[in-house]
Image 1 (cartoon, helix red, strand yellow):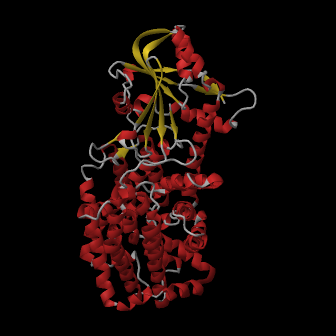
Image 2 (cartoon, helix red, strand yellow):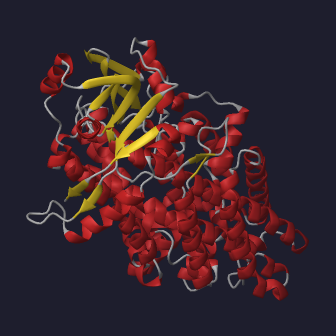
Image 3 (cartoon, helix red, strand yellow):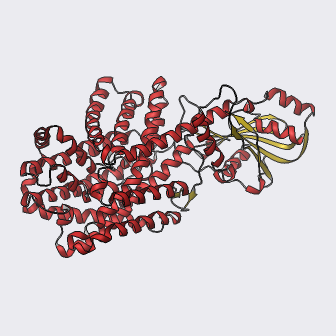
Length: 636
């Protein structure tokens, strides 16, 4: 029915890269609303976690050293690694670890055996991040009311559960109607946290010493092995950094960079510096230092604004997971799922029901089980740090194979990034007992699903029942009249490039006739994001009113076969789309008696996914009343 692009080099069509959008006010606001929600709300819980890792009463030297660690983590990882280098590795304008995997695997040769699983596992871990980010963000925002009054503390968790429930329940409606306010709300958020931090810094300007990286080194040396626990808290400041790359295709690298350097980074640095200034003045400060930045009368309005910002941050990660699911489907690593377009103007506004409800259940369970952002911080970071580590490994291959950098330069630069990533990765592994195993387990299960689907589909394609009949013999039978022709147009969807697919042979064997106009159709999803309309369809005439059509879609496009076949008709294929009947194979997976192609557990998992995958009419927007399935058993 459909297949990913064949392995090996793929010639991408010439096109203007979506990543090269110019910097505009609208683009900058979009970046604030979509890209920086996670990074921007990190001050809600990061510094509280870091201070707790050193006992809750840091000395002045420790406080400045901790701030220096945060500052340089933001500069090296986000400002340099992601903003400058990772975002350069776009796959024809698109970003994200799957796009990077597709980019480097085309020219990796044998190394693709390692790089592809690395990219897949990194993508799977984003799902693990997606179930924790909404829980920790919303909890940390609502916990601020405890600063104003302790009477509301018992209601924080129930309120967080209600907010999360409403957030996921509202996904079916999309965010097109309210998305335009995301940017202004986040702009207000950054202005407020930057201003609050600045007021605190002005009272204790000595925090500017934290710009000296030696203070970061000194605090690491002073705490010895315990500094790895400290790094686990520092890492929370850069979670969300991968969003700069993942959302590049939607926003463009220039608006993302401009927003980071001009608004987000200064606001974050001032906010973290302001919290440090409070600790310098009162090392025994109780409660979350973020909300202590605000005067008592402003705490409740700040909680309201923080809740809005965390909802936006949660929406960004949910939308990102939806987009990642679509990419995995198009590249052949995920079963077909029902995807709904929630906006007729914004391409990225989609809704994936199965993914949404699964994430909702897991997120609510995490929020209820851990109960507070401070406890949930122990489970946060393992998935993100692993994804960042794998991104660096793929980036090195992009430097060598795509950019053609000399080995010493690529090794030096990626080696620096790798050393930092390994330090954060090791620090987060110490959180396994505190719940860090949860996102890793969730990501591991998704990785198992993705690899099982791929191997299962490869086994289906190799099955003897799916081996095509000789095209020459079949066409000879047509020419000699051995196969009767009847009025009508038939389109046979093929799982391969074979011009005479098995579903066509089975149809003729059962009906003893064939429509007067026949098209065998192969759908290919390329390893680049978009295919120009002029290259959408490729036609080949095989005989009298017998055609083979190959239609191509990029891995971020929504496949519409009717529109693609209209392109084929314009090229000379005599299709009558108004009365065409579509045929596809719908087979049942059963156990192969001898020498099975898949282990038993994997075959059963694949069979469940295969049976429940979305049908062709829904995935390809075909008329259900003119769609027929021809089934049989496939032994694997």
